Image (cartoon, rainbow, N blue to C red):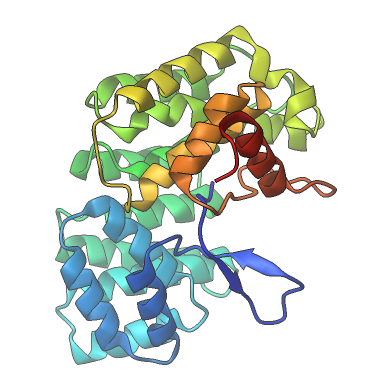
Length: 316
């Protein structure tokens, strides 16, 4: 579910990899500083982030994914044992260690609960628990973590995307138009304010369900050939989401969450044959078109998207 980020070269990689920092340049800079043990720069970044819970969650997740992040978070916590930010970073870092099998889920869970105690209004420790539960927990644990996130920030972008992905993985055998992931996405979109990016969540649900079906062999690996994007439900959710985008008055184009949603919508429009609308979204996203949420072993979606944009809107 990664939106279109800058490319960065990863050590020991065969080619460019998508940067989880997306277009958050301060985050990318601080992440590199943390890898060298400079946790004071993390402290300044999180203090500047304040109560922008979506951005805070995104930044903590990216910072916590580093291989050495838990080490430096512990050092920070030793220096400032009452810091909620240090506790939150340690919680996220330990979650990713547990996901990799390098720490126990119980230890990660304990750190998340400690961070939640130090900052009761912050949904980020519960987001960590949701990430952990998705990989190591039960449906009930995922639902509880999601409810705790939503109790603190009803529109939490990452949490809703994670729940859509989790629910989409239920019952892989066939494409049920009444599948629970569709109901969840429709409910969340209806509950959100009219100007919320969660209006695009039904498209995310449709994409996540396609991912699961394709992986299980129940849908064609090529979305354009699968028929998944030309059903009545697909047309309805894409029309509603695109209408929302046309009417949306927000101007926070620098927030990563908006590129997440526009990326899903652009892919959906493209594979439904709506090239002009897809190209419009692509130009809004910027020059980097991610391969996610779909990957093709023998195709370059970015090149295809740019070709579609040139054909529909003209070069440049």
